[in-house]
Image (cartoon, rainbow, N blue to C red; front, side, top):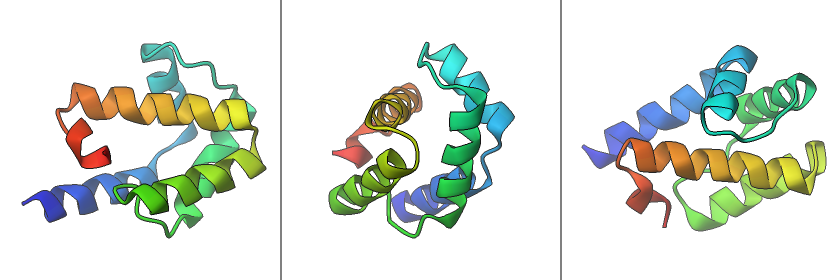
Length: 94
C-alpha cells in the first residue's frame, strides 16, 4: 500500500500546477513568487528522482536550487515537509 501511495504522490508532484503550488505556499506561509512557482512546476514535471529516497530528494532539491535559488529550494522543502505532516506521511521522508 505504501508503494502505491508513494506513486500517487509522485504523480501528483508531476501534475502540480502553478496555481496549486501558490495555494499551498500561501496556506503554509511559505513565500514563493509566481515566477518561482512556474520554474518549480517545470522542474517537478522533468524530475526523475524519487522524493521518498533521501539521496533522490537531495538531488531533486539541488537541481531546484540551481533553477531558482537556495532560499526557494529551502522554502519548497519546508512546504513538502509541512504537507507530508498534514497528511500523516512525514515518516516516509526520513
